[in-house]
Every structure is written in structure tokens, then in C-alpha cells.
Length: 510
Image (cartoon, rainbow, N blue to C red; front, side, top):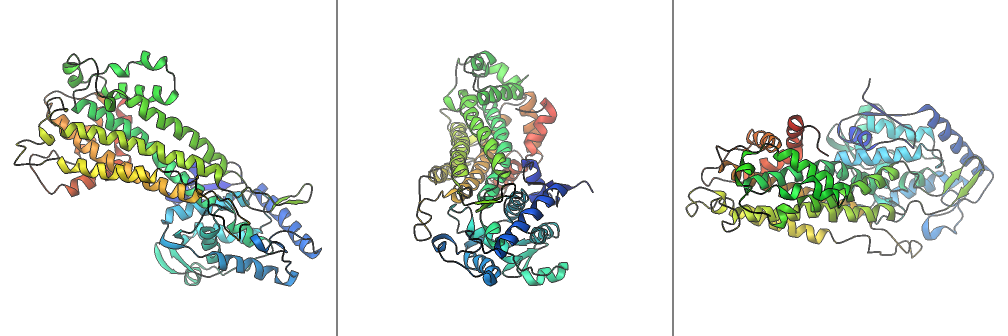
């Protein structure tokens, strides 16, 4: 069976995560990692028997770190931790998101610095592989000791408490385990803390959003090129020489993409002498889109590093038999990049809406009929779809306010600075979804505009995008109930179908 992702704590990739989260790949712990897990776990057991004082193992948690706990109560301590911390509210996270979170938590625990047993890890592996996915409310983490609340919801289900989705159907964890042939586990010392500390939730959310954003960045270039065609734009701003002397990589990549997309365009060839330059929303596509791409490149590097980091507490160093209580669980290293993510992605939507606005405005659209519809007046055409784009872009402006500048102390001020990184990732996902909607509206509008240039044909890449889009959404001759077509346009964007069609025609986009 090839559809297996093997984990060891240090080699997980973004594609691996997507394959497990969305494509149903199974998970397997590598043999070398199993040895490390077993050794660290044996040290914990030895230290408990020796009555060694270890935070969260033989003491309470957070502000209760000074309270010693009897050895006989160590299991109860760990299980009570999960029960008391599983207090999320709101709609459940999507199943694919929870799968990503579980994979990341597993990967960090297999590095051999957490003291968890193979038995407990195997329970989580079985949950993933048998499609038992915990019900995890979407609100409750401040990114302090990582994602205590959502991770506790995941972990408590392995004890047979709470609800799960088993093969897509919500039921009690006990019922799902019975159907799948599993039994609830009991936790060993340190295990509750190992399971619910760490940044797996905010990183899992961020990783899936990043994966989709990489496709959205290419789609934004396609949408921009289609708008250039629809608005009879001129090609001069995409000249390679211009970008070579301001060599930001994102800018260079986007300009290259636009040149590929509009290559051999009869529309641009006919109208390219009408102006020497276009408005910023067309002329500055490489610069604006490129800046967002530069941000995504940095975010990808940071998230991939975090995916293979150990982020719980305290940490075990088996070679020296030391236990160190540090702060690796703090979400700030991802909170800042995910705030940047929200800003960078929001800008792709912001400039997209400006191009939509030009297409519906007869004074700015370079010959398109008012609101891109024949017999305007009787027909309103795309007038209000631009309102929708504006509304969604405005929402993104609010959501793009950084979460990481906020901190509300928790745990009786023991945790007196928190990252709010989970919210940074959660709202980053919302911003991305909004941008997909705006790009859908832009592509719907631009393809309509291109139809008014017939019989002239667009470029090699833009024609591939136009043809693929027209397989799903027709030209609009007169006013119709527009919502279903707009919704279909957004679905095409989300599917990545336009990127696939374009890359088949012109080669891989940068």
C-alpha cells in the first residue's frame, strides 16, 4: 500500500499533511521513532517511581505547579487535565482540519522528547487510520501553552469521552470505538500534558490554509490576466527588463506568469497602442501579487519548520536524563506569520475587486458595455456582483487586523502573555475563503468582458482559463438569477481547475 505517510518527528512535509488530512492517507510511525518513544517513556516511569519532582507529572498544572501530586494519582491527574481543558465552544472544526491537527500532534510526539507511551500514540494512529475523528469546537484556544482546548477535545475522545465523526457520522466516541474494534485507553504519567500541549491546532489550520493559498496565488495571476484581456490592457508593465532591476522574486514570478498567460493574444495585439500605461490594478499586478507571494514563501518556510518541531512541556532529554520546563508551546512563532498571511492574502482580494470595479464602470472599462451586459438599462448585469466583492473585501480588512498584538493573561497570570496564534490561523482561513469568492467574481466578470472582444482571441494561457471556465459557467446574454452562476464560478476557483488547465497549456506557473 503506497498511500502511507511515515512519521518520525522531523521529516513531515506540507504535501504529507494534505494527503493525510484530505486524501485519506494512512499514518505509520517509523521504527527508529518507536525506539525513541519507548525509551523516553521508560524514563518517565522510572522518575515517577523515584518520586522525582517533575512539572505536570508529579505536580499540578499552570498556577498549580507548586502542588505536589501523589504517585497513585498520576493517571487521574493526566485524565482530569483533559476533561477540564476540553471546554471549547462554537461550530466544530472541519474533519480535514482535525485530521491535520492529529497528524501534527503525533509527529511532534514521535521525536522522543515527550515521554508518551507507544500504546497511547497507537490509539491516535488508529483513530486516524480508521477514520474516527474527534468533534472539536472551533473556539477556545489562545495559543498560550499551545492549543490546550482543541487538543484536549481530541485527546479526551481516546478515553472514550465526547463525540467523534466515524466515517462521516457523528456519534459518541465509545460507540465509534466499539464499531471499529477499539477500546478506551488510560493515560500514564505525563501523557495528558503531552497530548494537549503544543501548537498543532494553530499550525494545522495554518498549514492547510497555506496549501490552498499557494493555488490561490496562481489563480489570482490568472484572474488578473483575464481582466487585462477584458479591459484591453497594454503589456508593457510585464516586460522582463522592468522586473530584473527590482528583483523581488515574487514580482519576477508574477510578471513571468502574466507574460505566459497573454502570449499570442489577438486582443492585446490589437489594442496595445491605445495607451502607454494602465491603472495600477492592472499595471501593478506583478508588484502587488508578488509581494503577497514573497510573504507566502516566508510563511511556508516557518510552518514547515514548526510542523517538525517539539512544542510540548516539559521536555525530556534522554541522553542526559534531564527534564526542562520551557516555553516551546507558545504560539508566537506562528501567530506573527499567520497574521502576515491574512494581510498578504487579503491584498490579493483587494486588488481583484478594483479590477472588477473597472470592468463594470463604462467610463473606465475601455469599451465594455455598462455593467458588462448587452442592453444595459433593461439589464443590470454585473452591477451588484461588484457590491458583493466590495462587501467581502471590507470584511477582510477587519479580519486582517493582527491577532498577535493582543494578549489576555490566563491561568491566574502564570500564563501572562499569550499569542492568540490560533485566532490568527482561524481568521486567516476565513480571509482565504473570502478571497476565493472575490476571485470567482473577477473571473466571472472578466470572461464576460472577453466575450465582447470576439472574434479576437485571448492569449495562450488566458484562452485555456477562459475555455475551462466556460465549461462550467456560460456567457450571460441578459439578466438571470445570477447567484447560482456566481457560486459555480467560486467553486471553479476553489477546485484549482483553472490552474490545472492553464498549466497544461503553457507549462507550470511560478
